[in-house]
Image 1 (cartoon, rainbow, N blue to C red):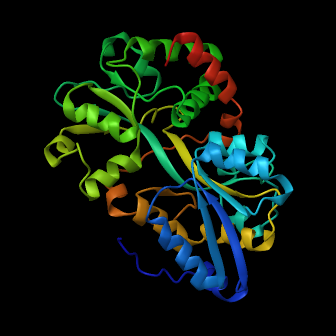
Image 2 (image 1 turned 45 degrees about the horizontal axis):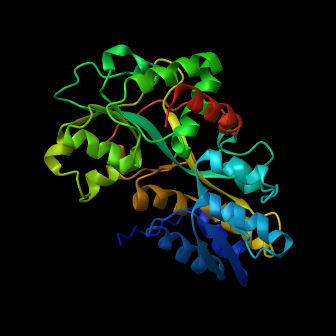
Length: 338
C-alpha cells in the first residue's frame, strides 16, 4: 500500500486534541478501496475511537439499514455517487447534523440541503477518445449525440448510478426535453451495447472496440500511476481526454460522500468521523491514495491526478441533480438505453 506523509494541519491537530475520545464508530461502507484502510487507522490514532466496518454494495447497505430500523448498529453510511446518497436520504436512514466544521469545510453545492449527507471526494466524469481515429473529439456532453460519432461511443448501462447521475445533471442543466433528445442520440451512436465498468470503457478504446468513451477520472489516473490489466502503456499513450463543457456549465462531478445514520448509537463519534473526512489530512489522502479530487478547496492533489490538467467543474447543486434520478430512468427506458 502506498503511504502518504502525515500532514500536520491546524485542523488535524485540533482533531487530535479537541476530538480525543474513547468508544467506537460503526461504518457501513460501499467504498471498496484498500487504500481507505489508511483513513480509518489515522482516525483511530487521532481520536482513540475504534472504527468497526461492515462493507457491501451501496443499495444493499441502504436496504439493510432500513430493515434494521431503530436497532441498526450503523453510525455512518459511506457510499459512492450523489444518487445513492439521495436514495439513502429518501429511505429515511440518515439524519441531519449541525457541524460548524462541515459547514465551513465542505462547499454548499457538495452537501445535502438538509445536512443529511456531505461529499468528501470528487471524480470528474469526462470524455476519453482514441487519438488516432478521432481528430475532433466531442467537447461537451451534448455533442456525444452528434451523428458524426455514430458507431463510436462506449458507455455504461442505464442501471449504473454514474449513468443516472450524468443524465440527471443534463436534465438539470438543459431540461428534460433536451436530455431526452441527447440520450436518444447517444444510443444511436453506441459502438456496442452498454456493458462493464469505467475501466472497461477505457479498455474498449485500447482494444479498438470503440473510439469515444465516458469514464470517471480516477480510473485513468490510477492507470497512469500503476499497471492496470488491459491498459498497457502504449494504449494509454494513445488515449486523449476532454474535460467537457468548458465554455458552458463545466465538467460533471461525481461524489463519494457520507452521512450520519438515522439511529446512530454513537452519534457524536459519527459526527467526529465526518469532520475528520473534511480535514486536510484525509482530503490529501483521498487524492494520493485513490486518485480522486478533494472536496475541500485548496487541498493539494496527487501527481497522477494533476497530470490530467486544470479544468472548470460544473457548479450545479448536486442535491438538486439527485432529485432528477427518477426522470432520468424514465428517459433511459423511453430511448432504449439498456
